[in-house]
Length: 255
Image (cartoon, rainbow, N blue to C red; front, side, top):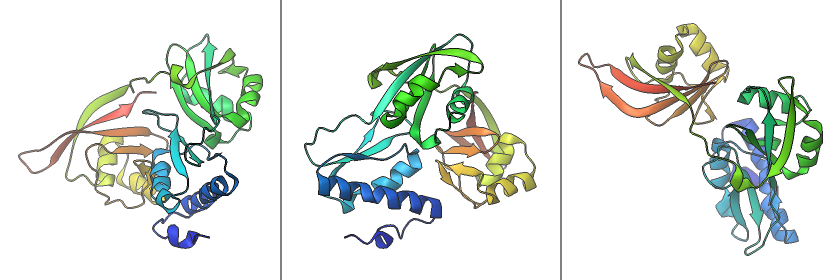
């Protein structure tokens, strides 16, 4: 039996260690019982952590679903050449009124469903979402309203869920350096103490990883999230001003 403590020694966050300990049971079960096993939905940082330990299990294959450029995915462990049953169900929701991601997610969570059972929620002309198969029937029967509006819900194939363009509102800012606290202050206009307080409390993530160091260097392509403010994308166009400061372009995700 593999030493989990040894495998996970490079992970620092206690809650991620707990999550990975559970996931490390899945490939062993798949190999021993010759059947597919699957995780709950993982954010991109959690997916990277899982990928970092998969090489310890050469007897099983690890694949992430849904395929394509999706944010939240599950990992399925299965013996080679094993045709496993799909562990995800996609739904289309028809709602007369305009709703946003928060409206839909809030209505689902109000049913007592855990967040990690829900994948991406896509808002187009209709609303689409991915859920774990184990709760699909419950969702189909119980999700009757969103934002007090009646909902018509129907299953669709995973391939029918669109890949929307994220509506970033672009702007520019100038900072002394690309430190995490400086970038957040420039974008949110929060006070220095407020920004540092949020970072210290674990309310700030960079590329989905919780960061508690105010001096963390931010790079082009990074995705920041600040609890209570939303997501901030740092774009590639970055330049140094004549006074030696940094001018960068960012986007705030439109709600």
